[in-house]
Length: 256
Image 1 (cartoon, rainbow, N blue to C red):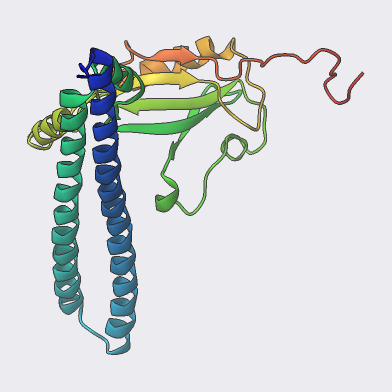
Image 2 (cartoon, rainbow, N blue to C red; image 1 turned 30 degrees about the horizontal axis):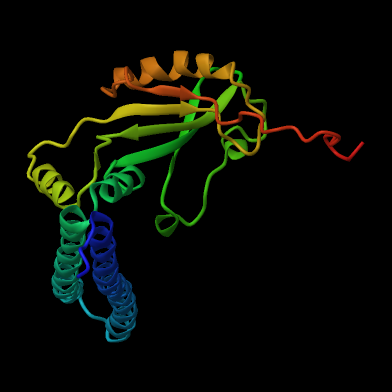
């Protein structure tokens, strides 16, 4: 007679959990692929509609009605996929929280979290006149070009520059369910959450901005932000140009 030990039971649980996880992850990947496919279909259909409506000289009212109906139809499809996706995420979390050894779940939580930061990043430059110039860093899909620090200053000397990060909140969640609860609450707010500055750094690829300039940048930017209602008390100044490790025998331009 073989008596199962705690280790045997744990190994069996992990093996079963692994199979169930693989199956659920496959479905999640399929949901994500479907989301991309639906978005591609919407773009293709929109392009075809634009060509057809332009060719027959459709009125503005007709265009608006057609595209509103299309938007609602694709939104319903996307919402259905999202519900299926969240259901599988919830199932995955249930499996791990219920059947995985405690040490496994704690380890997974350390390396995984759901972030819903609601952030926006600006690049900023301050020239000889002490006036800060800011440009938003838009996601690549929403921009046709990316402004640089050298363009902001037209190639002139920089006295401070880098990135400024603003956020409405920086909540982290170890559970899709917890995030959905927070997201539902957030969407139900009648007033938007206030913005606050979270990071001021000296990251730029066109200038070598020393860390000393961060104090000068904060002295100029913080009062301006506070004046328009953006809190700066939680803003962290970060040196993003910290030097790396020096390789013995390697000079700046050649090996010596």
